[in-house]
Length: 146
Image 1 (cartoon, one colour):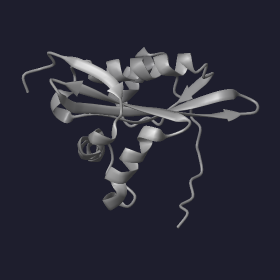
Image 2: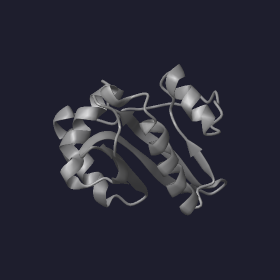
Image 3: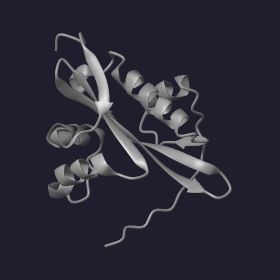
Image 4: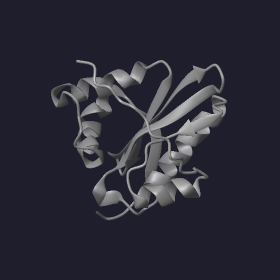
Protein backbone atom coordinates (compact mmCIF):
# COMPACT_ATOMS: atom_id res chain seq x y z
CA UNK A 1 0.00 0.00 0.00
CA UNK A 2 1.64 3.16 -1.23
CA UNK A 3 -0.83 5.41 0.56
CA UNK A 4 -3.66 7.60 -0.55
CA UNK A 5 -2.69 9.73 -3.50
CA UNK A 6 -6.09 10.19 -5.09
CA UNK A 7 -9.42 9.63 -3.32
CA UNK A 8 -12.92 10.12 -4.64
CA UNK A 9 -16.21 9.47 -2.92
CA UNK A 10 -19.10 8.71 -5.24
CA UNK A 11 -22.46 7.00 -5.24
CA UNK A 12 -22.44 3.22 -5.28
CA UNK A 13 -22.83 1.73 -8.76
CA UNK A 14 -23.81 -1.83 -9.71
CA UNK A 15 -20.27 -2.46 -11.00
CA UNK A 16 -18.96 -1.93 -7.42
CA UNK A 17 -20.94 -4.84 -5.92
CA UNK A 18 -18.11 -7.39 -6.13
CA UNK A 19 -15.51 -5.09 -4.59
CA UNK A 20 -17.89 -4.03 -1.79
CA UNK A 21 -18.75 -7.68 -1.09
CA UNK A 22 -15.05 -8.25 -0.35
CA UNK A 23 -15.05 -5.37 2.17
CA UNK A 24 -18.13 -6.46 4.16
CA UNK A 25 -16.41 -9.45 5.89
CA UNK A 26 -13.84 -6.94 7.26
CA UNK A 27 -16.78 -5.30 9.03
CA UNK A 28 -18.81 -8.31 10.17
CA UNK A 29 -18.84 -12.09 9.94
CA UNK A 30 -22.59 -12.01 10.60
CA UNK A 31 -23.76 -12.04 6.97
CA UNK A 32 -27.22 -13.43 6.20
CA UNK A 33 -27.26 -15.61 3.08
CA UNK A 34 -23.71 -14.72 1.96
CA UNK A 35 -24.40 -16.11 -1.51
CA UNK A 36 -26.88 -13.24 -2.02
CA UNK A 37 -24.51 -10.50 -0.78
CA UNK A 38 -23.36 -9.26 -4.20
CA UNK A 39 -26.96 -9.12 -5.44
CA UNK A 40 -28.14 -7.19 -2.37
CA UNK A 41 -25.32 -4.68 -2.79
CA UNK A 42 -26.24 -4.18 -6.44
CA UNK A 43 -29.87 -3.53 -5.49
CA UNK A 44 -28.82 -0.66 -3.21
CA UNK A 45 -28.15 1.50 -6.26
CA UNK A 46 -31.86 2.15 -6.84
CA UNK A 47 -32.93 2.16 -3.21
CA UNK A 48 -35.63 4.53 -1.98
CA UNK A 49 -34.93 5.99 1.46
CA UNK A 50 -31.20 5.50 1.41
CA UNK A 51 -27.94 6.36 -0.27
CA UNK A 52 -24.76 4.28 -0.32
CA UNK A 53 -21.35 5.56 -1.36
CA UNK A 54 -17.95 4.10 -2.11
CA UNK A 55 -14.48 5.53 -1.64
CA UNK A 56 -12.08 4.94 -4.50
CA UNK A 57 -8.34 5.29 -4.02
CA UNK A 58 -6.16 5.14 -7.11
CA UNK A 59 -9.05 3.55 -9.01
CA UNK A 60 -9.89 0.80 -6.48
CA UNK A 61 -12.89 0.66 -4.13
CA UNK A 62 -11.45 0.71 -0.60
CA UNK A 63 -14.38 2.07 1.43
CA UNK A 64 -18.14 1.75 1.63
CA UNK A 65 -20.98 3.05 3.74
CA UNK A 66 -24.51 4.24 3.66
CA UNK A 67 -27.17 6.45 5.10
CA UNK A 68 -30.74 5.20 5.33
CA UNK A 69 -33.66 7.30 6.49
CA UNK A 70 -37.31 7.13 7.42
CA UNK A 71 -39.90 9.34 9.10
CA UNK A 72 -41.05 8.83 12.67
CA UNK A 73 -44.12 10.92 13.63
CA UNK A 74 -42.64 12.23 16.89
CA UNK A 75 -39.11 12.83 15.58
CA UNK A 76 -39.32 13.70 11.90
CA UNK A 77 -36.78 12.28 9.47
CA UNK A 78 -34.34 9.96 11.25
CA UNK A 79 -31.23 8.45 9.67
CA UNK A 80 -28.91 5.55 10.35
CA UNK A 81 -25.33 5.21 9.22
CA UNK A 82 -24.92 1.65 7.96
CA UNK A 83 -22.07 -0.74 7.15
CA UNK A 84 -19.22 1.77 7.19
CA UNK A 85 -16.04 -0.09 6.33
CA UNK A 86 -12.58 0.76 5.02
CA UNK A 87 -10.20 -1.88 3.68
CA UNK A 88 -7.73 -2.84 6.44
CA UNK A 89 -4.77 -1.96 4.21
CA UNK A 90 -6.02 1.64 3.92
CA UNK A 91 -7.06 2.37 7.51
CA UNK A 92 -5.58 5.26 9.45
CA UNK A 93 -5.37 7.54 6.42
CA UNK A 94 -8.52 9.62 6.88
CA UNK A 95 -10.73 7.59 4.55
CA UNK A 96 -13.40 6.77 7.15
CA UNK A 97 -13.42 10.41 8.22
CA UNK A 98 -14.02 11.54 4.63
CA UNK A 99 -16.69 8.87 4.15
CA UNK A 100 -18.61 9.82 7.31
CA UNK A 101 -18.28 13.50 6.44
CA UNK A 102 -19.86 12.84 3.03
CA UNK A 103 -22.74 10.87 4.57
CA UNK A 104 -23.38 13.64 7.10
CA UNK A 105 -23.49 16.17 4.24
CA UNK A 106 -26.16 14.04 2.57
CA UNK A 107 -28.08 13.94 5.88
CA UNK A 108 -27.99 17.75 6.10
CA UNK A 109 -29.26 18.05 2.52
CA UNK A 110 -32.17 15.71 3.40
CA UNK A 111 -32.97 17.69 6.59
CA UNK A 112 -32.53 14.60 8.74
CA UNK A 113 -33.04 15.57 12.39
CA UNK A 114 -31.19 12.72 14.14
CA UNK A 115 -28.58 10.24 12.93
CA UNK A 116 -28.01 6.95 14.71
CA UNK A 117 -25.43 4.23 14.30
CA UNK A 118 -24.35 1.01 15.92
CA UNK A 119 -20.85 1.27 17.31
CA UNK A 120 -18.33 -1.51 17.01
CA UNK A 121 -15.23 -0.69 19.05
CA UNK A 122 -13.29 2.04 20.80
CA UNK A 123 -11.44 3.06 17.61
CA UNK A 124 -14.66 3.78 15.74
CA UNK A 125 -16.20 5.28 18.87
CA UNK A 126 -13.56 8.00 19.08
CA UNK A 127 -14.00 8.78 15.38
CA UNK A 128 -17.77 9.13 15.76
CA UNK A 129 -17.33 11.27 18.86
CA UNK A 130 -15.15 13.67 16.80
CA UNK A 131 -18.19 14.17 14.58
CA UNK A 132 -20.35 15.00 17.60
CA UNK A 133 -22.03 11.64 18.07
CA UNK A 134 -22.96 10.91 21.69
CA UNK A 135 -23.11 7.34 23.00
CA UNK A 136 -26.60 6.39 24.12
CA UNK A 137 -27.23 3.31 26.20
CA UNK A 138 -30.33 2.20 24.33
CA UNK A 139 -30.85 -1.52 24.34
CA UNK A 140 -32.90 -2.90 21.52
CA UNK A 141 -34.80 -6.05 20.69
CA UNK A 142 -34.13 -7.95 17.49
CA UNK A 143 -36.12 -10.80 15.99
CA UNK A 144 -35.05 -12.91 13.06
CA UNK A 145 -37.86 -13.53 10.56
CA UNK A 146 -37.37 -16.80 8.61
